[in-house]
Image 1 (cartoon, rainbow, N blue to C red):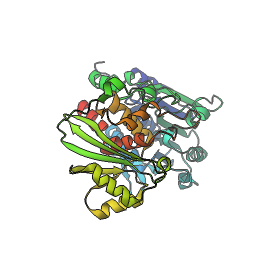
Image 2 (image 1 turned 135 degrees about the vertical axis):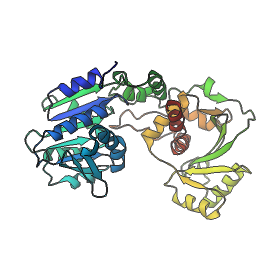
Image 3 (image 1 turned 90 degrees about the horizontal axis):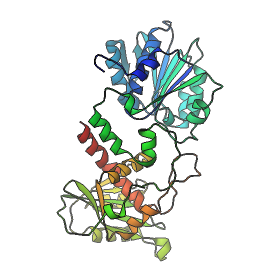
Image 4 (image 1 turned 30 degrees about the vertical axis):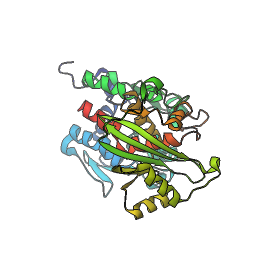
Amino acid sequence: MSGKIWSDKQQEFLLAIDKRINILSGSVRSGKTWVSLLKFAMTVADSPDNYEFLMVGRTLTSLKRNCFGLLQNLVGNDFEYTLSKKEGILYGRKIYLEGANDERAESKIRGMTLGGAYIDELTQIPEDFYKMLLSRLSLPNAKLYATTNPDNPNHYVKKDIIDNYKIDQVNWHFVIDDNIFLDPTYIENIKKEYSGVFYDRFILGLWVIAEGLIYPMYNLSFHNVPDTPRPYEKYWVSIDYGIQNPCVFSLWGLSNGVYYLVKEYYHSGRDSNNQKTDGEYYDEFVKFVGELLIQNVIIDPSATSFITLIRRKGKFSVKEADNSVIDGISECATALKTGLVMFNESCEKSLAEFGLYQWDRDATEDKPVKENDHFMDSFRYFVKTTKIATIKFKRLND
């Protein structure tokens, strides 16, 4: 490895003759972003002076975070950008910058005439935007470079691009073990972060269906612990709120680096034939918490009336939950696999959901079956919003 500036897979990609559509898919930290940006920069530098280009991310913030620093490390002062104007200059050529986080985004690029484009995380880009972009790549030898982690095999990126051999495209498959510049300890640690479908996609780089139990790594004999008194340093409560649907309060306590589900509250207006008001639930919540000092009450952001009530009372600090479902499930899986979260045995209703919470196999995109999921949502709100899994592994890998 001594003296090498790129891996064998990266060199093979750099030396290859490009297609019109060039996809780099595979695992996280496999070197695909770095080498795709280098190839894109080389393409821009070799293009006619009057060619214009486009760089796209799910948002401008994610595009900046994932790509702009790397690109500047590669080319130095030959790349400058201004997010407010959504424009950059690369080797003297204009680069338009866009976020594409919903189906309406395709209107942003209508009328453009492009000599090339770069897409960060293609599976996060709406299909309508992608198709509009293809129509804009109308100048001679215009090329698209796109990176992505794998997703559901029914995703348009897999079905209509990678598996479509009638179009002028190529898919380069990268895995983390291709990246010879990573510390082996880091590789070992990051492989521990993922399990199930997330391991298959983000470590092995496979396009697989999410099916079966969402948390197969949950182990009754390992994760369930006696309700033994232990010294808790901090407390949080996460809430999945419902009036007719069940309402769940989950009390979390931090003890010696582990987050415990200390106790639960569960009420179903429909099953009990006793529908409670916001005020009644607030009274139940105050009893549930008692005299404990709560860092934050983390609650489903759609529960607007209950959030307003808690804030008006002024007793608790409220944080609206990060409701990113798939990312949240991935972080919960990491927390389970690494023993970062444990559950007191008395939380029977909450724990029962682990054996019932499943992927919707009939869906065309990843999503859970919307049944037996109220504690699962509360669990996800807590882990995703507090970022306990990502913080732990950032420290571990720094």
